[in-house]
Amino acid sequence: MPLQILSTAEGETILKLTRHIFPHETLEDAVYAFVVKDLDKNPSIHSMLANGVKDLNQRAGGDWLALGSEEQFRHVEAIAGSEFFETIRSTAVVSLYNNELAFAHFGYEGSKGDGGYLYSGFDDLEWLPDPARADSGIRPS
Image 1 (cartoon, one colour):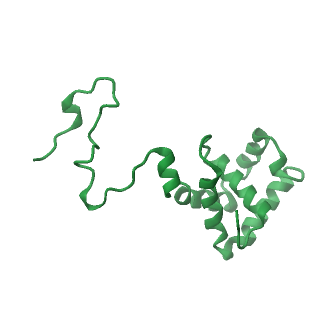
Image 2 (cartoon, helix red, strand yellow):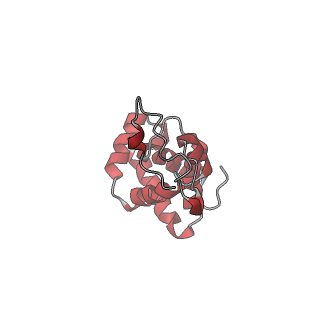
Image 3 (cartoon, rainbow, N blue to C red):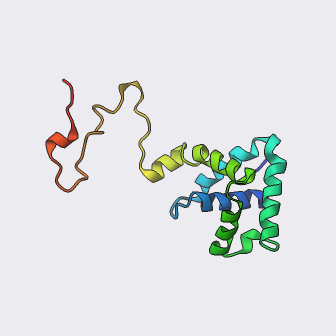
C-alpha cells in the first residue's frame, strides 16, 4: 500500500492493530487499508503514530508483527485508551465502515437518498421463519 508519511512497517502495524480492534475474519486487508491511508494523510499525528508503533515493538521485545495473534492482542489490551489506540479506533469507525468495499462485504446497499426506504423493502421480513404480515408495519397509500 503506497503511503506518503508513514513507513511501510508502520502502516502494516497499524493495519494489523486495526484488525485487532475491529476483528472481521473475512474482511479483506484492502478495507482495513482505508484506515491506514486516512491516518497517513494527517502529518500532525505522524510522530504520535510512529511512537505508538515503536511502543508496541518495545512491548513485544522487538517486532510486534512477528508475535502470534494472542500475544499481539495482549499488547493491544495494554495500550487500550492511549492516544495512539484511540486515534486509530476513532478513525477506523468511519474509514473502515463507510466505504463501498465494506458496504458490499456486510450487505449494506447504501443510502436510498431522499426517497427513503419506504418502498424499497425495508419492511420485508421474509428472512424470518414465519412473519405475520402485520409485523411488517403499515405502508401508507
